[in-house]
Length: 337
Image (cartoon, rainbow, N blue to C red; front, side):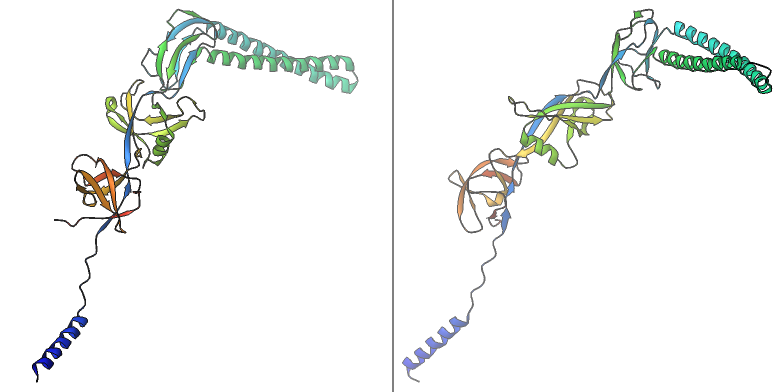
């Protein structure tokens, strides 16, 4: 075969072979999704009693005994102090004597009225006398009812010689001593409910939203009471302060050892990053000439501002920000060296 022809045949075979060879697919590039960055806000407050009530004397008289001092809980009956009930007890005895006397008279009048009913029926007595007996018996029933009401009033007055608050509440102030004369309505002290403590906070709208989004509810850190404790939202005040523009919230925490007012409590909230940053893996951020870049899944390179590590130095996530970068976007990762 002629040399020229042979060369042409080889060239044709080489071209056919090249046409049948398919290029190897480019390796798929790994992508990462930008996560919304958050900033940690730490707020401080101090505990106080869930409720406080004044200890008020409801009877006038001399204080016989004070059951609890400041800092002590009230007993199961909730009695803080006793006012002398002597005169009320004497009135009760007098009331009992009057009721007994009246019942004896009513028994006699009932017997007399029964006898006259029989005589009137036989025509041996005047109807007017029977009417008088019936009227006296009716009047005695009314008097007995009035004495029974007076008995109940005296029992209530006797009950109110005890100055009380809910059982277990702690005395916060004591202004009474045995032998002291007190008047009705006089404040003798103060008691509070320390089984549940409240911590007031003033939250911005972003912080209030973060409070509601906290998984499992908010957690308060109380260094003086053994560490963190789960809290609940006790109340949210509906009023608005035009100066602070914040929402007043009371958090409640129960079951603390050594519960008292004035314990320092810290509330830690994760709020949206005020700089609008996102979280990306370290492999998604490239540094060139002291500038930081990321590559979107469409191939566009975006210059970002490095705001810092997430989770402390050495963390796998970086906090970056740029107008073109938003949570949910996907970015290319560098190949691991």
